Image (cartoon, rainbow, N blue to C red; front, side, top):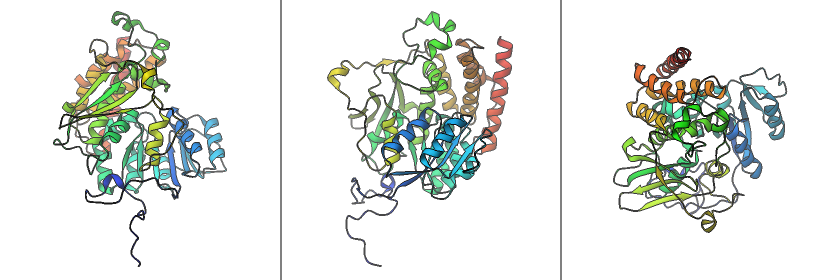
Amino acid sequence: MAARPRGTPRPNRRSDLRPCNSRTPDRLYLAVRSRGLAILGCTGSIGTQVLDVVRSLPDRFRVVGLAAGSNIALLRQQLDEFDVPFFSSSADAGITQRQRLGMVDLVRAPDVDLVVVATTSTSALEATIAALDAGRDVAVANKEVLVAAGALVTEAAARTGRRILPLDSEHSAIWQCVRGETCRESSLPDELVHSIVLTASGGALRDLPIERLPYVSTEETLRHPVWNMGTKVTIDSATLVNKAFEVIEAHWLFAVPFEKIDVVIHRESIIHSIVNFADGSSKAQLARPDMHLPIQYALTFPDRLPSATPLVDLISAGRLTFDRVDPARYPAFGIVVEAGQRGDTYPAAISAANDVVVERFAARQVGYDEIAKTLRQCVDHHRPRSADDLGAVRAAEDWARQFARQYLGAAR
């Protein structure tokens, strides 16, 4: 076989895992093989934005599989528009022109290169691990999968040598800040990184008097001042449970101890994360609050391509502000971080309990203050097991859902 000419890209290039002494530079390749995508949660807020990116870069991607819940009308449109051969749905879709598969089989389908996990809760947990075991890279927008089973998911990636690519703007920001600083972004050594800082908008209730919080309506909670997101994540943003989940997620994605992860309220949502290095310097990633940008970065990695997102105008942005998280305003934040620090099945349990109480609050069946109260009770009453197998994780979730329903029934 003839020697490969210098500068010729290797197939399936893995720049984030290449050896320190590699001389292959990062560059924009004009001719690339299109990447086959399986998108889990294709009809949700993130899933539809993933497809926006696919539309903007049609030569880069082929949609091989789509998985949806009950929005069959939108699923049909997407299957037809992108001529998708495989689909998965939890509802009776009545779609006969495409091949229907279970979610686990979908991520293993032929020609799938990258699996995007944009589902809610942990419904795609088994499929995420199956994708990694099948040799697929996984782009994760779903926080709960890593919260509930971070050890299992990261162990699967390590076992198969596949990548977990973050779609969250905060984790994408960390990833971008540490690229080029270390040979392996999935593990940040103490001698390199002092700490990381995640920013939070503060959610829809950030300016509401604290004494009014127990009486706030669902409608008020859903009026996010910056981001356009789904119902559950918008409520989680108001309680800062979403940010606590991101702390746990960062712990697993970058192998950073909890004590080295900080959170600040940044109302403008221009700086998405900051990495503080051991030499006293810091890097921050700035961008407009638009999820299309971190989605495109993950999908086109290792390339960075032009996008329709305008640059940040610092003059127009004006003053950038930062504040500490107030535990009186955001009691649920500390409870969820505590569950992450305890480890074992505590995170899986609190994630499942949060699903239940947020669903009840969204349905206007319980008050806003019941969210933090339910999570506190869940942590206090949970009997943990080691989260080293799926059975233990699923058992903890089942217990937490039942506990939360019983607690909320008694609390009414």
